[in-house]
Length: 347
Image (cartoon, rainbow, N blue to C red; front, side, top):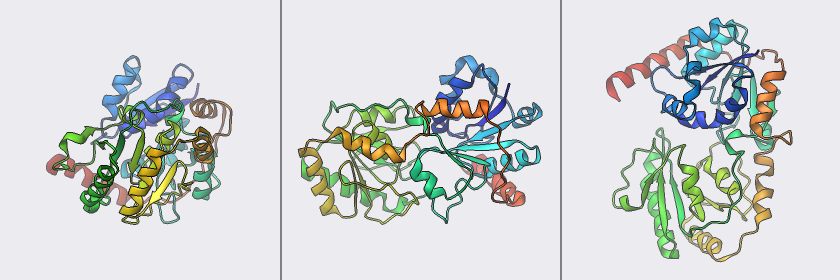
């Protein structure tokens, strides 16, 4: 049997890998690893989803001693996972990164430079990655999402100013969006990312706490999503919810969403925002437009679901280790230690 370790660094990544793990348990020896200091609810989520598979949780040391074939992760650019990848190279263990969602894939980005093999969610991502170690598998995170007509007519505002990114423009962004919706007469709720620490003063009655386990239902219960850069863009379109990517601050996050102005609009001004909201809430949407949009962003190289494609590859294929960017072990250890002291004494 293949011996495969999964490094699950957050609750979102547990949900990403859940369909793959369900197909691998019993067919491979699985080892589940979590970050040492902060796992962003990963372990808690895994225990909730897989109470019958708790015996698979172990330490990195134990997993590597078993003679792993693969180390699977999602994001391959944090200090801890880079140290694990460095160790995997020393032990001749192939590392595989499953694309979580839309991330910065520009030439200036360090995303997906360290794992040996990348499982990409679609042709758009493969083209942006510009590497020869990319396999298009589709994204298991989205495989069970189906198109549904909305039952509610309110808009969902996605407040996801996290990890210090554009937090300084959050309040103005929220004001622009809520003012535009009020002007258009569209009711709304604000879905606040669990790692967005704003207080949204004066809007508390509109805020609904978000998270990997509930955001799907929040989108499902709405008729329109307004967001900045987010993986919810694709998830919403799959469900049949048009999306407005409101970007007055001109962020360039290294992924080309290719807006079609049918189901996805990229808007840079308050006046255009009002106009598009009124257009989307007063016109009949065409189902095929949603399918046409996601075809290249979330494509697969097989008729099977992405989780089966990934599981079959892991069970049946042999990969050659393809060392990409060098890992500065001293630098990553220093970052790792700094993270420890921050969490221990300041957080």
